[in-house]
Image (cartoon, rainbow, N blue to C red):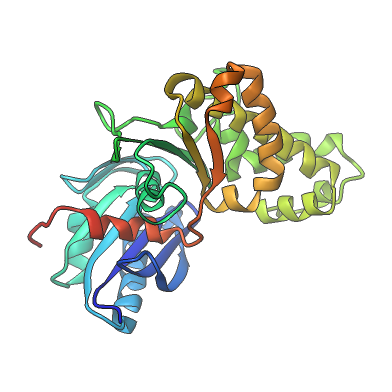
Length: 317
């Protein structure tokens, strides 16, 4: 019987995912709410509180904490999120704001969303028992995390493994961060849609090219039907992902790379063949052969955030 549970919250650019998770990593319940970052910081925080309260009220056991994964540069000790560009946040005292709004005497733990997901994979998923690995998350954008000796690498200022904002081409597509040619503008959800707008005139016979309000889901559905525009978009995205894989393998030579995120799961069959070809074009064969690349084993994204509760040091609320 479940003795204690945690609530995990994964704040994304499009949706906020919530899960009620036990100590084995089992999601007992989960649901989602739209993020709607254009409505402002306070509105997003209120939706987080709404989703947490819904799970707390239905929990079959005591809720001992809330773990929150958030995009941007996250300082877990201070509870502060900075430069969350996909949310439009410059600096938010996320932990303090959520604890105040929740009005519950339970701790809130925060971490960068991709780093939280990597900890979830390390604890409950495809990297269980693996002390050293790289985690890449494909969703609205592209994020990364490195786990070394069982610990997440943060870097001097918290910017370690911001792979989505490595520039493929300094003269390329304008990114929401203000720079040009960032990788996520080619392989993240926003990147795939940017490719669609750029290339649709080249494929007049494509059904996808005629779509008035396309989504990443419609691109994948079209790819399933062998639409040439969809396949070209995913081929380009896969090559961009392969460039990132090459950087990871060439610099770190990790034994394992885990590919996660909603888009990482959904587009695996189309993205990975060109990604692996591009990887092998860019690194020594021996280096490529020494790295195993696998899909995430966690299907509920908020499980990673919940793992923060089980493994965070105790803190007075």
